[in-house]
Amino acid sequence: MLTYSTRARISGLPGEALAWAQEAAKLVAKIGGRPVQLAGRVGGHSDIVWTTSLDDYSQLGSWLDSIQANADYAAMVKIAVEKGLFAPGSVEAAIWRSL
Image (cartoon, rainbow, N blue to C red):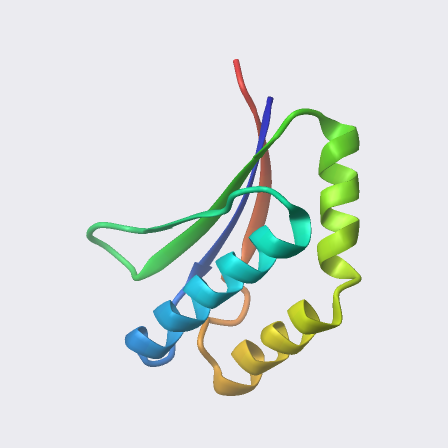
């Protein structure tokens, strides 16, 4: 079992960034056919993280390909960049393996 995560630090208006993050989670779940969880950091910087569980690396690759090729997803990312919702350089993706 794998968990894929993407973390970002909010730098724009928090309400607008959180609304965008929720819509992005819904869109990625729809595109990829897998549930997406969204969580916010308690204390410290205003970080948020999206996570998705996948069975194996093959499924991860297919899942990522479907999301990255989607025009609606690309348009959402463009909006986030143009509005400065997240701090440049703060977006970090990771793959976690269950132990």
